Amino acid sequence: MKEYTYDKISVGQVVEFSVQLDLEKMDAFLSITGDKNPLHTSDIYAKESLGYTGRVAYGMLTASFLSTLAGMYLPGKNSLLHSVEVKFTKPVFPPDTLIIHGEVVEKEDKFRILKVKASITNGSGEKVCRASMQVGVAN
Image (cartoon, rainbow, N blue to C red):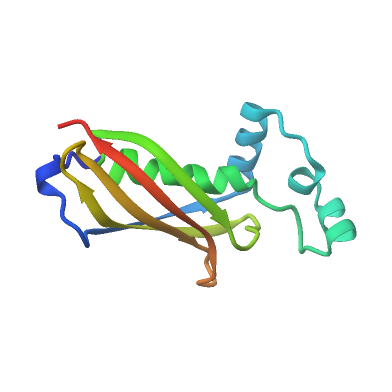
């Protein structure tokens, strides 16, 4: 876990990490949320009804790694997540490796808030999610 203070973060700073979005994470998300939509739970439904190759990852599971971006990497321990605006651009199919990328595009000194432009790409290099985040820095 990173422990950046506000003063140690600069505009243009970039962080990137990867995560395996697998069926175990899908099942854990189902257990937590109770979302039993067959798009996310049934390969047969996803294939026959929508023509996908299999079940589709929950969009909010994919987006949840944006919390990891702020809380573990940028700024890390001193993170106070204020807002996240997300756009899903392509479906994610487990198992896939996601690459989460964040860049500080602005600093608001008065309130110690970072504006972070984020994106998530799949193992084929396709952007599956993009986001704008406002992250406060506690110290």
